[in-house]
Length: 116
Length: 112
Image (tube, chains in turn green, yellow):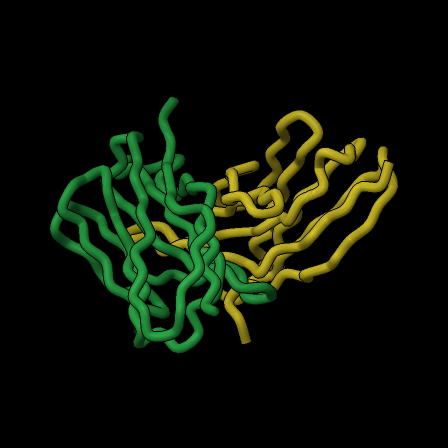
């Protein structure tokens, strides 16, 4: 079955440590996204990539970094510069098709990061 | 003011009730409207998708878009305990990158 796999599901980090969240998709989608979800704030876009070896900052990119070396993979690194990293992180992908369905995002199951 | 406003709830209803979930928005350029359902500790999944104004029905679910009032709704008929989840509205303009803007989500509990 096609889908998006995020790992780990739960992650604990000490202050000052970098951590990397994995996102893999087998949907053959061109575009991939990272969102952060906090209670009462909805989904906020961190980074997105529409093609391999290219990515753009979203609304809250500070303290995060990404890479897109393969179409299937879009890992997110939460660096020590992110002041409030405890949150639920969601990876999503979208096909490049135009017209109906062009805006439909498919999400992974999420990764919950807790800073100790 | 947020581009998309959504009452966070929680909303508690008895099983079998008709549920109405709503979002308002300020950007008149929005053309694509979506509803996602998110179970606890899971990723959102697409529930309904509409383009421009009008109604769309899928089983017990009906999505309505009123662009003149900048108001969208999701109706759930004969609600079931399995409908208990957070419902997120989402929308985007046509053309270009088509950034998707999400509401904060409404938490729904259907009581048996």
